[in-house]
Amino acid sequence: SSTSAPLPPPANQPKYTLVHRGLVDLADFVESTTVRDRQWPKELVIRVQVPKIKSARFLDIETAETSFRLRTMAESPAVYELNLDLPFPVNEEEGKAKFD
Image (cartoon, rainbow, N blue to C red):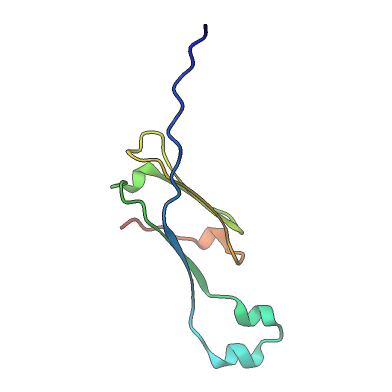
């Protein structure tokens, strides 16, 4: 009989909100030539609730042009994973993360 290592606990999908944010300027609507330009937010803000995590050192966050991924590290006190397809492409090099 073979013995296998115990399986890691299943990941919980944390609660989150995705907010489109930006300044509204009438000129954006008047000078815009396409519908896409008029609907594109200045920022996308993702707020993720990970209540059992007390430090950012337990989190691994990846942002790509059209996706966002958050997962906890192996030594984390809780297991979370969130994979999102973003509604708009983002500049991944200008993204910021903040842990509160």
